[in-house]
Length: 425
Image (cartoon, rainbow, N blue to C red; front, top):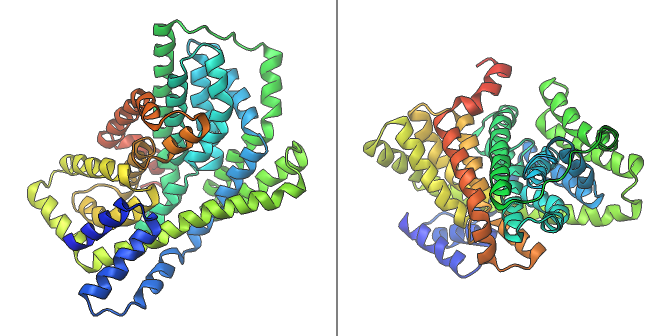
């Protein structure tokens, strides 16, 4: 097993793309140390993405791209300003709430950072906020895109573990709201300490106008979640509805996208979705290799021989996931590690849905930790700030995420109460 890990880290250190590194480990190990025919590699790669549920990924990505290209995030920001814009730190809180609202549409963390940050980072700086605070806040708050449903990361976790994706979506909602409120409180404290000027509350006509202009956008999560939990369609089918609804309102209602822009939108969606599914395929092939070498059973035995207490096991899982999130993209980390962790978690009584929320929260923190933090890369491209400056800027708000992780980890009902109510566990 050590040979497999050495090969993997060597390939990643050389800067080889994650998909190639994961599949390359399997090819090298099977070819050099076993008699297993290499034809098994393409078979396992195909099996890793041969899932109807994974069809949700390109359609949710398409909805996010339509919303971003069509400038519909402007309307969500206007709605967020109605509710929190007038309090101390109101523009920062607006950024957090806008990220939460956009997450309900996109299911994507980088898309959330781009859509909200492109508008609100300059606005916050102009309003008197420190640029580093603004960049750090939105880089961190954008990571809520993979926790608040619909979440592409939850879909991948559900495919890997067999957990109900509908239950996972529900389980991520309350933690997402709580962490969003914690980030807003951080904005209020920062604004009071730094004496940042307050915006005034909008007048009633202004508020009604903002709500009316965003009504169709706000209808998307209502349609998606109402359909899923009303039994009208599955989460996978909800992704198709989400994409169709987004295209309809952008083309026919708001008219912010032209028909000749559709091919470019589809190309960008295909590139993002293809890259993600390639990573899932490679990680699935790699997880098959480590399973065939008996690693899950060995890890389970080793962990349980040291501690069989549920809370100590959860603490150990968090530490490993936090480290993994620094080096692996979320899809890779889930597909590689969950076949190892799930048997351990089940043997000490950890609910798979609870484990799913903990996992996604760790991956959320991984989005803002170097060297592979995707949100950091997006923020760097948007602001041209050095990566180290963005890391330092995001550190205070990342500590808020860590506090939220501790709450969700050691108070399971925070994530399980809504699934239990709907599914009558």
